[in-house]
Each structure stands twice: as C-alpha cells, then as structure tokens.
Length: 186
Image (cartoon, rainbow, N blue to C red; front, side):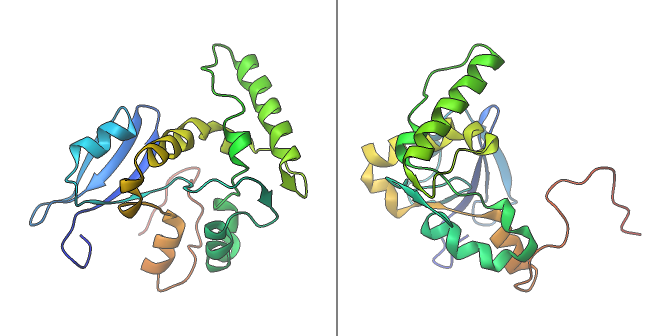
C-alpha cells in the first residue's frame, strides 16, 4: 500500500508474461501472472501504483554510466552495482523485434542489436546478453506508455536491489541474488 492508501503492485517479467505481487487493503499479499502488461493493467484498479523491474524511458543514445535512474541507484548498492545494467538506445531495443525460431537466430539478432547499440553510444558499447533477453518486455512497456501517456503517472521503474537496500537499513545486500546450494540460517 502507498501512504495514500492506493494499492502498490510490484511487477517483473517472467517466461509466462508478467508476475505481479499485490495486496488489497486488509488482505494478505497475493501473486498473479498475466500474459501481457496490458492484461495486468486491465486487471488492477485504475488507482493502483505499479512498480516494475524494467527500464522505463529509453534514451536516443546511451552514455557511460547509463540513464539517470541507473546512475542514481548504483552508488547505493556498493558491490551489488552490477545488478543494475545500463540500457542501450531505443534504436538498439527496436533493432530486432522478430520472434526467433532458433538459438542461432537469437544470437545473430543479439549481434545486430549490439551493432546498433555501439553506433548509438559514447563510448561505443554493445548489448549484454542479459539485457537483450528482456528487450521484448522493455518494448512492451515502452509501446504501451507511448500509446497511453495517462499511465505515466502510475507505472514506475523500480530496482528491487534498492528496495532491499532500504529494507536493510540503507546497506547493500551482502549476498548475491542467486545462491548455489542452500542456506542454513541455524
């Protein structure tokens, strides 16, 4: 819940589409999966604030350090800064929009998007394979926010690592996102 009583929804992309954690007033948190971001928006109250773990606001060109949101949050994360990667230019994100039927086609599309990214960045930088993997999700939100500017007041970019930092007394988390093996707190 936000301080004004509106529903706050945490959202991230997943293989099935979009996963959302939300809580209605006086109810336990719940998790829902939606096939598309538009379906997610349609299912939530119009007053809900949506915090999505995806870049919003694509640059025409990229620079060292990334966009404003990326540059602002990295210093808060200490050794965990690498969890926030710089997003390339809008042209790089839209350079390859086909569905890829083979792994080879996917890697070739990644190489082409990297070439566009290098041509639209200073200093020239390609695209990480991790970033390329979520391009379709970023484009989905970007297209929706362009088509529906009214959503810009309720859909916001979020960085979970920053939320974890705040919940941890403004100290970056010491453990990585993924751990091999189990943790025994005892």
